[in-house]
View 1 (spheres, rainbow, N blue to C red):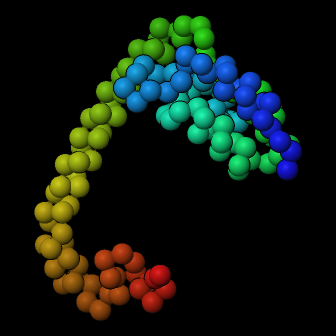
View 2: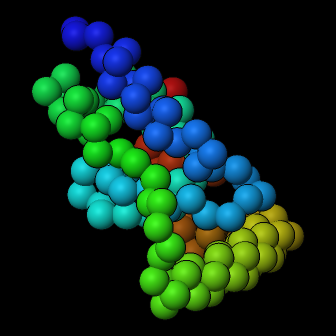
Length: 135
């Protein structure tokens, strides 16, 4: 497999001062994925670069690394506003999922009893309908 050290170094250099920080502002990037125009980073760019080099076909790697770059200019204000709303919605979804998980845990015994009543003889073992195939 070819060595893409030069391309990796150049790609990572473009992200100096423009990398993902968990509590930082979003860092929008051109061509994080081959079929996406721009999107915010969800993890440090070094992880994406490593993934590209280790898992993508060798004939794609140079092109992917060449065009992977942070958006430097300001985003259109409508997109910025929509991003803020999306982040809020995700936070609300996280809360709702936590409530769902809590309710599920609290109701699990009751659900299992209902399942046993409605599906006598069902092979469900708490993880799969195919317990004999489980690892």
